[in-house]
Amino acid sequence: MSASVVVIGAGVSGLTTAVCLAESGMDVRVDTDRPPSATTSAAAGAMWDPYLAEPRDLVERWSRVTLSELTELSTDAGTGIRLLEGTQESRVPCDLPTWGGMVEARMCPPDDLRDGFVSGWRYRAPLVDMPRYLQYLVDRLAKAGGYVREHHYATLDDAMGAAPVVVNCTGAGARDLAADAAVEAVRGQLVVVENPGIRAFFTDDTPGAEELTYIYPHSDVVVLGGTSDRGNWDFGPDAAEAEAIIRRCAAVEPSLAGARVVEHRVGLRPVRSRVRLTDEWHQGTLLMHNYGHGGAGLTLSWGCAREVADRISTALRSHP
Image: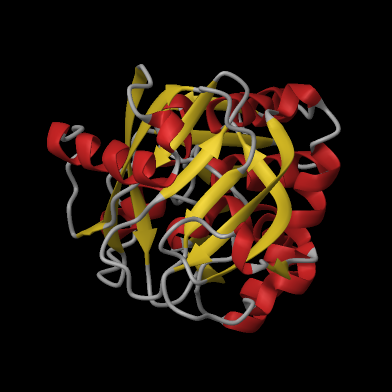
């Protein structure tokens, strides 16, 4: 089946972009070498959280757009999105983050902090059950007339001609597909355990911390993190790392000690010095790039997708 737009990649960036394009009236196909359930996005925790990324002014705008979209979607239980309150805390003194105003974050009084933490802030933000949310996006795409197929492209040249417009949302895969040496994989491992009754999220936001510690509760399970192994492309879970993750999280939330492990997840964050959201004409095809979001793929997803749709519309008007 032909399409006017082919989106390469079925993670949260690719699917969100495809939904925006399909709902704008375009015929959209998502080509992916792995199904949405096997992408890095499916392995994520995941919360709206504006990680440090460049360009900062655009990241703030994209984050704000996504926050609005996810907040609206949280009213539909089928999306897997809930608005949840919790804290980010630090073992050294820290000021409220610059994005705190978007979620009405407020500094925690000393009595509200976990043992060993000296500053922190409390706020309410979207927490997302990613496997469920990705399926929601697939279903929403289908409702708009788009679809997903499994197909592998070795290079972007292979994709030229697949449609008048091609959008590259391949994440860490862009290192090979787009021959972009600026993309680096940062491996993240998570452990999913049965929820012993935790209802608030927690993130250790200590600057320069060597290890990641976060606790994201869903209804029946809790996602525990994590790791940040730069340059590690291994998708296999590491037993020692899993034990260390559980140990760190249980030190913060003792009720997690002994919780039954349900699942191990591993994903490759597509880290780049700057998010790449650009458009160019390549072999007569309009080629858009939308990747390099690092650990903020969810947080930037709707903002970037809306901008991709706007840029495609503008480019096609000026280059019929």
